[in-house]
Image (cartoon, rainbow, N blue to C red; front, side, top):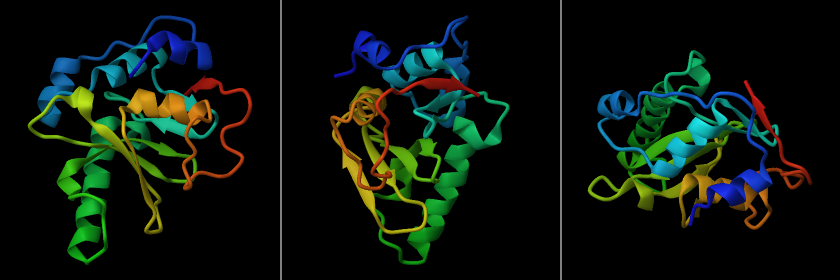
Length: 171
């Protein structure tokens, strides 16, 4: 379960005005409601990098490489391309919605339940040039906290990640 105070103890939030996003417009364009924990994360931390390794895509970003909607289109196309060519994916491309990436190009996805509550979406992690996929039975912020606190180890990530102290760097 997502706990904002626990997450803020682990990673100090940036100072300043929280990021303002027109969530109704973003969700209308994407055709789906996004998870509340993700909205909290973007509102509290904004566009940036956790532990000098993990970037969370942000709606309405001027950086296409970190823009949620642009990356959703890009990764969706790539997943469909792979599926059409017989590559094994853990889920249907339409059930995966990218929400971030690592410095190494690994992509973090929500496993979308199209008929259900977005707060119940789980996380999948896929390596960019290989067959390894891992899943986490929880939401994006819960997953991020578990990884950054070393409660969960993702085999796709380098063995030395995360370091002892995890910081957020705005970009």
